[in-house]
Amino acid sequence: MLSHIPAVLKGAALERVRALVRAAPWEDGAATASGHAASVKRNLQVAGDPARRKPLDEIVMPAILSDPRFVEVAFPKVMAPPTYNRYDPGMTYGDHVDAPFLSAGRVRADISLTLFLSDPDEYEGGELTIRQGDATFRARHAAGDLVTYPTTSLHHVTPVTRGTRLAAVSWVQSYVPDERQRRILWELSEAKKLLDRTAPAAPETDALRNGLFNLLRMWWQP
Ligand code: NI
Image (cartoon, rainbow, N blue to C red; front, side, top):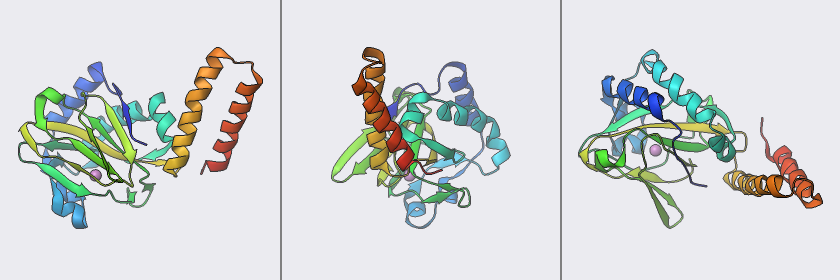
């Protein structure tokens, strides 16, 4: 399931992250890609030293992991520290699939995420383009908005033609690795929210709660 979650980062926290990223030293994005992905990756990213990225990670990771809308779609178990990237005019990231494991094998990438750090009027091009089967989805959202998609999806970023596009990208290992199961759980949770408000004591609401909780028990992988 693809998901667009607005304003995961906002206000002073968003401005602080934007300022830190703008002031950071940059390296060639191909440094952290391998094989085919490295050959189509033409961007910049905040340079190597994890200690330098710590002040960024300390704002960005809790903001994402504590957002209830993200938790409802992702069931996050562990998140890899983000990569902060930059696309200037002419930069692009061609079609690729993300690696299955990160952080030296400690994180299995079930869900990919992009946190936009530039507003759409700050650049042209730079669309995150995700393919699912023969359908194509394009994402270009406000600074602070998050997009998540299954890491199983082929995707690319179209060339930036004006301005600068900043974003953080990361990957999450989910307690529910199967994307079909995550979608079913999310849909049933949406129905449960309505029934909790409108018919909390109805036997049918209890039946739905029971069904949802039992599916969670069946599909949860600790
Ligand atoms: Ni990617």
